[in-house]
Length: 118
Image 1 (cartoon, rainbow, N blue to C red):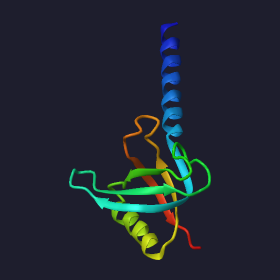
Image 2 (image 1 turned 120 degrees about the horizontal axis):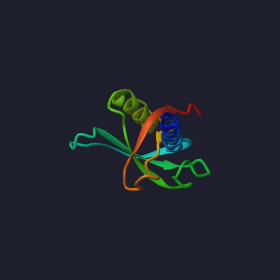
Image 3 (image 1 turned 135 degrees about the vertical axis):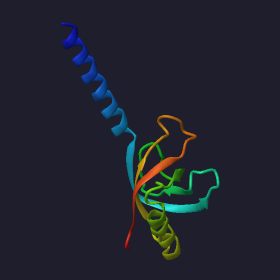
């Protein structure tokens, strides 16, 4: 009986962790770059993006802005796409880890970024 209860509790905890981590992911189809910065605090590059999709993206309202950290493993590539979009005046499609549900003051983490061709 005790073994069955432990397995049940472990399954519930695992499902809760999966649902919690999945709920923080968001995508936004039309974002513009407000500013790009490099930090010396160890967090690397950061970018302010503005939601211009016409709807909310995760917890970012339409017209709202959010600070994002760039992933350390792909920071150079991600930054290259972002700076190319700025220089060509293009919008971005962004998939990100939305931390606002945990703490609105924390920056989000960009997972995937692509530049729109039109």
